[in-house]
Image (cartoon, rainbow, N blue to C red; front, top):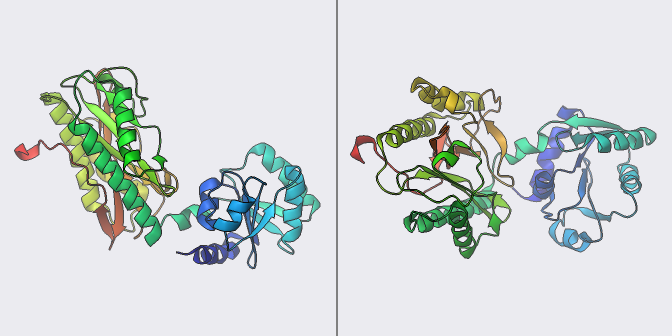
Length: 362
C-alpha cells in the first residue's frame, strides 16, 4: 500500500468517525502514514491536504521521506505552531486525535487553542492502528527479513551454548549475531532467563549462569526497516527432567493447537481461548498470565490484540504472534512463540527456528 493509498484509507474513515481531519502524533502511526522516520513531528490530514510539521532538525529529512506531504517548520512554542496548523486546516471543525498517546496536559492546552479557533478535538481509538493491522507486500517483506535474521541468530547462539555462560553474555551474543546479519537494531530488550529467572516473563538478563538441566527462556527479535520480529524458544542444556518435558509438552500442544485452529473472523479472545483451555485443563491456568499474542509491525506490540477479552476481529493479512507460556515460581518457565500470518483464513507460520520436541519420542 503506497502512502497515497494509506491516506485514502484514512480519509474514507473520517466521516464514519465523525471528524473532519486527523492530528497524528503517535510515532509509529506518523511513520506509517507519511514515511517519515524522524523522532519529532505531527501530521495533520484533511480530505484535501496533508501536512507534516517538524522542527529544524528534521525538515530536510521530512522533505525527502514524505513527498506526499507539505512540510511545515515548527518554530516558536508548541502553541504557536499548533495555531498555525489550525489556521491552515480551513473549515475543518472537528479534529480527531489519538487519545492513547496525548497527555492530559497537552490535551488541556490544545483544547483551549481549538476553542479559540472555533474547532473541537475529538478522541479517536485505534483508527490508524486498524489500518496498519493488515500488512502490505513491502511491510511483509521487512517483517520476513527481520524474522529470518532472528531465526538465524537464535540457531547460531543456541548451538554454541555452554553451561556457566551468563545470561547477559548470551543476550549480547544474540544481539551481535542479529546485527552481523543486517538488523538495524534489536526489536526490544532481549530476554534470556535461566532456571528460576524464567518464572518472570520479562526478566532482564543478569550475571546468573546458564545451568545444566534448567529451562532457559529466550525471547528475541531483530528490527529491519522499522519492522520488528518476535521469537521465543525454551531450551535446555543437557538432559531435561520429567517436569521440564511435561510443562514443555503442555505449552507446545497449546501453541500448535492454536496455530492449527485459529481462523479469520475469530476475535482475539476466541483465539486466546484455544490455547488457554488446554493449559487450564492441564492444571496450569493460573500460571499463564499474559495474552496469547499480539500484532507485530512498526511496533513490537500492536493491533490486533490476541488475548483474554480482546474484541479485535482477526482477518486475512494480519501478522501476529502466538506465544503461550507457563511460569512456576522457584522453578522457571516455558514460552514458545512464533509469528504467524492469516492467509486464506488460516495461520501460516513465518518463524522457522527449531523447537524442542518430546512428544512421540521426537
